[in-house]
Image (cartoon, rainbow, N blue to C red; front, side, top):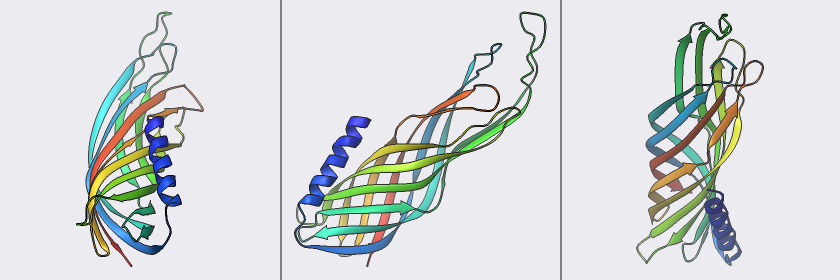
Length: 215
């Protein structure tokens, strides 16, 4: 993952250094797609070190704002921001006390619920022309924050900043673009604080269709 992100970032910086004359555009995009998340929760108590796994498939739609620098050849470098949060999964369960080897009971009981969202999603991207009909290859690097919301008896999870990469194919027609892309985010690892040391590990990727308009 880190090698892919470094390679895409290096390519974007190389594109930036190649600009001589360019046009600056502002605009907005509309997107829809499917987000897949696979997660595992590991219990951190002495009496229970079990794990629970769950997968989510989330259909999403939204929009973004962007600014991009377009050279005369169509070579483009841009930055986009998604102002709305994207859900990546939620779950709920009820635990009951269980007997321990010493004859007592594990006092790790109660209702538990947790959810996570991708917020403040920024993407630094480049469009590399392919031929003369407006087609281009897309490469980008994501920067985002995973925000958790939970209801736990003795502890809480925090937030985590993550990176990701994006690859895809698109076509520009004057000031409009349509593109299909795939995004993959680095592993999300969060440990609870304030009580037990439960931890959550997850990975997420998405496939999306986006249409954008520049001015």
